[in-house]
Image (cartoon, rainbow, N blue to C red; front, top):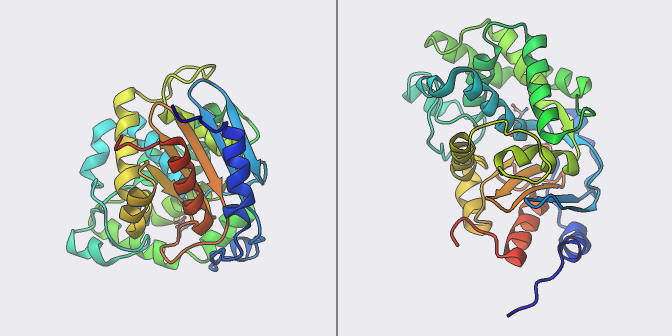
Length: 309
Ligand code: GLU
């Protein structure tokens, strides 16, 4: 039998090779707080189902979770309205950029999935029902903190402000859905909540720990936050829709469900085995972390992790 390289060695190697690659992609440019992040950072963290944890590089540095937060938002919204969410948002990959407006018009204001911006805005609108934005965001933060077993996870106000100031296209999506009766709140309220949701900061270690709620049966992790069926479905969405129009490419290269954000973070799940977070702020042409994707590919290969085994 082939000897298995210890996890810490694998992560150190990934950090020393891929993590130091000079060809790092470009940071998101739409707000200074993302544009000015040091491109030379790279972190990776793994939580195994047996409770062991490993990390390498800048894995303790907080970064903007951006669209990775959509994983937690959809779990919260499903907890609130159950399958009712699917009358407002679909479950199909879009094949288009994260903020595309094109399909919305063709499909009467019902977004393709909860991980493109339009679908995430509807998801936010769903968990906002019956509460103030502050209460709703409090509920989301509670979910993330419970999942990570860490109360030191916060919303970055400067990022939230920057998001709001540059959210013209997201506002357009929100108003368009409102015109189709697919937004329950004033777009200002929903968008304010959405922009704060995107501005949750987490380190790789915090994100990998938070991702354990999808893993199930993790040693030492408290009660399940979502049912097994729901966790499977969220992972199915991550697999098919988690990387925008690069979702097929990520599935092909990595073979694991994952969700990326323009802050350069990726959360991936090796079902039953591990929750993995990687961060490198430079993005590829799809808007997904360039080195993060490469690192996930290398780790999955090294561990022989794939949903297609
Ligand atoms: N805050 C970003 C937006 O809504 C999130 C995009 C992303 O991470 O992909 O434009």
